[in-house]
Length: 188
Ligand code: FES
Image (cartoon, rainbow, N blue to C red; front, top):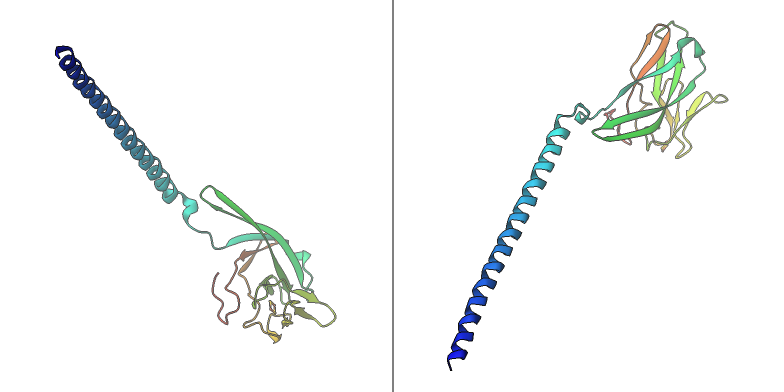
């Protein structure tokens, strides 16, 4: 009988060691999980602070674009100018193609109109028709006069005229997109 009790005592001793081992494994695991969560919080927090502090966080809504020498635009003959606009938003950089129509009059340097190249109805690209002297949109039959007034089709407002300046003989415009399909000219 004595050896049986001894072995029973030994079994109890093994169980205690196993419990301790299990406990210390659990503590180690808890510590690791807690540590990882803390590390993730620190990394995310740092990135969010950096993102908020970045000057690019101010969403750009417009850009000045050089359109070339003013003399390159003949009075009474609309000319299309195409370019690429690049916006930076934090680490993300986005480029998009854009275009304007420049219409020069005969009344000197400031007799200029620069129109956003999108139709104000749903944004299709319109073009100048020399034969009819109108800007025509192929999508739904929108038509505008040389000074941007709507004369046919569904466009709800005139072409979107952009701010421009002439400096050192060069023309530039403040490129901007506007909400489509509405009668008010509201920045997009
Ligand atoms: S998008 Fe130009 S008429 Fe519809």
